[in-house]
Image (cartoon, rainbow over all chains, first blue to last red):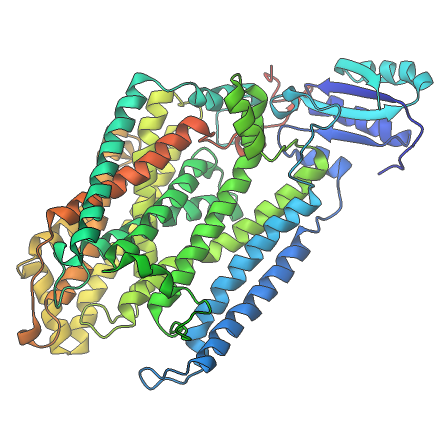
Length: 175
Length: 448
C-alpha cells in the first residue's frame, strides 16, 4: 500500500453500493499514492485482493501455540506420572500411547487459543473507540472508503469519487 | 453460484436475521416458562440427591452407570454435529451449511455445557469433581493419565473451549451488524461489548478469514476425537458388549446422526416462527436428510457388526450379551433403538419425504429418542449381564433421574432460547459471502 502523508488534514468518507465502483475508486487512490481504509459488510475476494493481498501472520501464532500445547501435554503426563508413580494393569509408568490423547488435546487447545490471541493482536481488537469515518451502514449493505488528503485536493478527489458513483460523500477535519 | 436464493440481498439478509432479535412475543415467554419449569425440576432433583446421597438414584451394584452417563453421552453426541456442520463442511466449502451452521454451533456449545454437568451429577460427592484436574494439591498425587476417564476430561474441556471460541469468533461480525442496527440502549451496549468494537475493514477481514480457517482446521480433528475418547470409556474396559474396536467410528457416526437430527428439531420451528424460508430452503433439508441416511446406515451397519463380532469371537459372554440385548428382559430398549435409528430413517430414500417438514420434524425427535436408547442399551445391558451370573443385577431408574434428565432439556433449552432472542442465530456475514457481490454490471444488482 501507499505511504502515509502526514500533513493531510482533511478526511474524506464515501460509501458505495457496488463493488466495481469501489474498485475503480481504489485503483484511482492507489495510482495517486493515497493511503486509505476500506470497510465491507463481509470479506469480498475482489476487494481483498486489491487492498490486502499479503498473508496473515495469524498462522505463526497458531503454529507456536500448537507446538507449545504438544510439548506441554506430553510434559504434563510424563512428569506427573514420574512424580506419582502408580503402576496400573502392568503398564509402563511412562505409557506414551496413553499420553498421546493428552498431547493431542492440548495441541488443539493451545493452538486454538493462540489463534484467538493472534487474531486479537493482528486485527487490533478489542477496539475501544469508534474509528473515525466509520458508518453503521458499512456493516450492512454499503462499502466504505475513507482517506485523508490536503485541503486543496478535496475538490479534485470529490470529482473523481463522483465519477466512480460514490454516494454520501462527506469531508471533515482529520484531527 | 450460491445455494441460497439469488433474490437475497445484503439488506434482506440483515432484515431477515435481525428481525429474530425483536422483543420476545407471548409465545416465547410461554415456551421459556415451560423450559424454566423443566430446569427447576432438574435443580430440585439434583439438590434432593445431593442432600440425601447418590443412593436416591437407581444406581446399584453392578449397574453403576445409569441414566446420568447415558445422558452425558447423549448430549456429547448432540454437540458433535455442530462442529461437523460448522468446521468440516466449512473446509469442504459446502454451501448448504451457511444458513444452518450458527444454530448448529450454538447447539454444540450448549449441549457440551449440558453434557459437562452429568459426570458431576453422577458423582456421589459432586463437590470433589475438581480432583480430576491435574493441579498441585496437598495430597501430593496426580490423576492417572492412562485412564480414559481422564482423557475424557481433557477431550470434553478442550472441545467446549475450542467450540466456544469458534462460535464466538464467527459471531463477532454479526454482533457488530446487530450493534449498528440496534435501537435500544441496552442492546447497543451489549452488542458493542460483545462485538469487541469490530468494524470490518479489509485488514481486519484478512486476519479474520485466516483465523477462521485455522479454527475450522483445529475443530475438525475434534469431530473425530471427542466421541472417540468418550467411546474409549467403554471400549478400554473388558465388559462384554463394550470391549470392541469398532466403538470410536460407531460413536462418531451416531453422534453426527443424532446431532443433525437435533439441528432439524431446532431449525424447523425457528424457520416457521420467523418466516425464514428465503434463508433456510427445502434444499437444505434435503441435504441434511441425506446426511441422516448416510449416518443411519453407518450406525445400522455398526449394530449388525457388533452381533457378527460376538458370534465370530466364539466368546460365550459376548455371545450371551448379544442374545440378551434383543431378546432379554430389556429387549424393548433395543427395539426402540433399532426402529428409530435404522428402520425409520430409511424412509428418507423417498425424495418427497426429505422435504416434508412435518415428517422431518417428527423423525428428528424419534431419532434422538432412539439415540438416547442406544446409549442406554450399551450401558445398561452390558452392566446387567457381565461375567458371573452371581454378579448379575438390575436397575430401576428413579423419578429423581428422570427429573434431572428433563432438567437437562430445560438447561439446554434455556440457553438456546436466550441465544435466539439476543444474538443472530443465522450467520449474516457468511450468508452475504456466498451471495454474488453487488456489481453495477450485474451480480447482486437488486442490492438496494
